[in-house]
Length: 171
Image 1 (cartoon, rainbow, N blue to C red):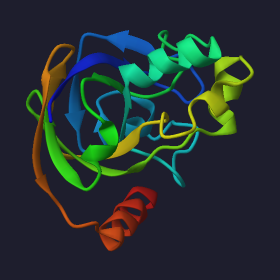
Image 2 (cartoon, rainbow, N blue to C red):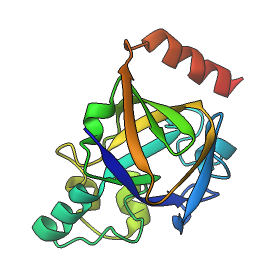
Image 3 (cartoon, helix red, strand yellow):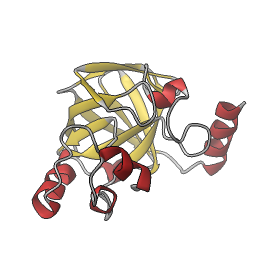
């Protein structure tokens, strides 16, 4: 199982358009300068993911099946992958460039993503396992478009650790 980073998207504020970048630094709490790392995301404080990943293949299927083009970042996910099923990264450690992550949970679409995208059908199109996953930063570092995704060991799900992380962010 291997894949590559095809795109990286960040934004400083919740609901603001996503911006494509060539490289980014993963730090405690997310991607440096991104809305959730800064605490300014739409869901900051109650339902947030440090980093989100989505498959380029899912974006292509959405365009083919639904006629909705999300290649401009309206998917609202941070990392676009190619060649790997992101759901296989759940409960697994993986690296992008210098950074290590752990896949924590699926990231289903919400009504907010459709509202920000400004197009009917976006939330529905991201359903059926096309919405991607959430990941937490285990070890920070820089990664870039074109980097390989290296899959490491599986880790046992840690719901208590997730709850602790949420409590830490709220305090």
